[in-house]
Image (cartoon, rainbow, N blue to C red):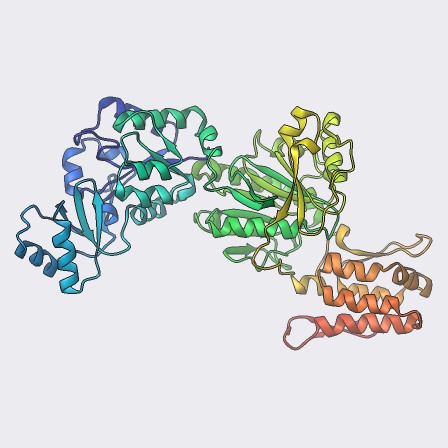
Amino acid sequence: MRFMALATDYDNTLAFDGQVADATWDALDRLCESGRQVFLVSGRELDDLLAICPRIERFTRVVAENGGVLYDPATRERRLLAPPPPPEFVDAMRAKGVRHLGVSETLVATMKPHDREALDAIRELGLDLHVVFNGDAVMVLAPGVTKGTGLTAALEDTGLSPHNVVAVGDAENDHHLLALCEMAVAVNNALPMLKKNADMVTQGEHGHGVIELVDALLDDDLRSRAQASARHGLLVGQAGDEPFTLPPYGTVTLACGPSGSGKSTLTTALIERLVDADYQVCIFDPEGDYGGLEGAVTVGDTEHAPPADQVLELLAQPRQSVIVNLLRVPLADRPRYFATLLPRLLALRAKTGRPHWLVFEEAHHLFPTDWSPAEQALPVSLETAMATTVQPDQLAPAFLDKVTTVLAVGPAPAESLATFHRARNNANAVPDAKGPTLERGQVWVCQVAAAEESGSAPSAAVVVNIEPGRTHRRRHVRKYAEGLLIPERSFFFRGPEDKLNLRAHNLVLFVELGDGVDDDTWTWHLQRGDYSRWFEDVIGDSDLAEAARQVEADTALDSKQSRARIRDAIESRYTQPENPNLPVIGHHGESGKEA
C-alpha cells in the first residue's frame, strides 16, 4: 500500500457550512478500517474545531491555526508550533478600528478588506509577520508557518512520510499542504489555481469530493491516477528533447551490462535524486561502495556484519536512508541473510509505506539462480526496487518475474535484453536485431510489459542520455587496497594456457601474486592489457589504469621492470600520508604496518 494517510482541510472540503455530513464520516471510517490514517489540517482555531467537530477522535492528529497548533485527540495534548501574536500588533489593529478580530494562540484572524490594515500595521511596527488568505478570511501569523509545516510536524510525530500521504483542499492556504504531499487533490469547488496545481480534481464538491477520493483510494490505492502525474517522476535523463522519467512507485528496475559499463554510476545518480527528494532508500551494498552517499547511514563494515535490528531501527525514521554493507557477510550466506531481513522490511512497508525504494547492488548475491528459497522470500509484488547485475540469467526466476523495466548499458545493450527475456522464457520479446550501440553515459530503457505484449523488445525500448549525479560514486579505497572483493570483481592470474587460477581479491594480494607468478603468466596478462583494464573497470582508478597502460605499452621493459613499475604505481596511490589507514604494500609482497 502506497498511500497510508489522508490529510484534509476542514471548511469547504470535508465540511460544508461548518458541518461534516454523515456520509462523509462513513467514508472516513472505511478509510481507517483499511489501515490508513486521517489528518485534519485547518486554518480554524483549535477550540473552534473542538466545538464544531463532534468526532475529532477520528483524526490521528489535528493541525489547527494554519499550522500553528498540533493536537493529539487520543491524549488531548496540544503543542504550539509557532510563537503567539505580538500584543503590539493586536493593539494596532484595534486602534485602526478593526472590530472583527480573532486572537488565538498563534495567529490573528480578521476578514477582508481588513488585510489592508494588517499590512499597514506590520509595516508601521516593523514586524516580521505574513498574511495568509482563506477565501474572505485573513490570517496573520509568523513567517514560514503554513499548513505544510504543521502537517510535517504531525507526520514526524507518527513516523509517516509526506510521500505516503494524499492531501485534499480548496483554498489559497492549502497550496503548501498539497505541495508537500505525494498526491495533491482539489475538490471541485476549489479555487482555479489550486485545481491547476493539483494532481487530481474530484467531480464532487465539498464532502462529496472527499467521499469520491476515499473510494478511489480504497479501489486501487490511486495507482491509475498517481501514475498519470509526472510531478514526482524519477528522472533518468533525456530521450531526444524530452525528459525520461520512471514512476516513483510500482517500478522494479534491473540495470544490466558488462563490468565497468556504468551500471553503478547510473543507479548512484538515481539514488541521489531519490534521497534529495526525501524518499527513503535501503541499499544492499555487497562491496562497500556507497559509504560516501549523502543522506544515508551505513550499517556494517569490513569487520562487522550489519545487524538487522539496527537497520530496522534506522529505517523507523522516515527521512533516514540506510546502506546495508555486506562486506563482512560471506558470499554463500548473503541470500540467507537477506531472506531473514526482507520480511521485516516488508512488514515496515505494510505499516508505513517505507522504505520507498529497495536497492540491490549485484543482485545475484541475494537472488542467485540456484537458490530455491527465493520464491518463498520474495512477495507476490516487490512494489518498488532497483537492482544491478552483469548478466540477468544469474538471477533467480522469482526475482526476474518482478522486473518491470530493464536499464541496459554497455556498447551492446541488445545482448543484455536478449539474455533477460530468455531467462524469463519470453522468446517472443528477444531482440531480433543488434540494437543501438551505446556510448558511455547512455542507457537503453525497455518497459518489460510493453515488450512482451508487442513481442519485440526494441519497439518498447528507448535510448536515454543519462542525467549524471552531482559526483561519481566514491570508491571504498581501503576495500580495494586490503578488503575482500567478490569473485567476479577480483583479478585472476591464469596464464597463457589457463593453467593457473590465482585470485587477487584486493591490491595487496595483487602485488603479492604478481611478484610470485612466473614470467610467462605475468607478461601474458601485461600484453593483453588485463592490468589496466582491471584498474579502470573494477578499481575505478583512471590514473592507476593510465599508469599501467604506459607500462603495458613499453615493450623495452622486461618482466622484472614491469612488475616494479606496476607495483610502484599502486603503492604511490594507496599509501600516501593523507590516507593514514591504508596499508603499506611491501616490495616483497608483505603487508607492513599501516602508515
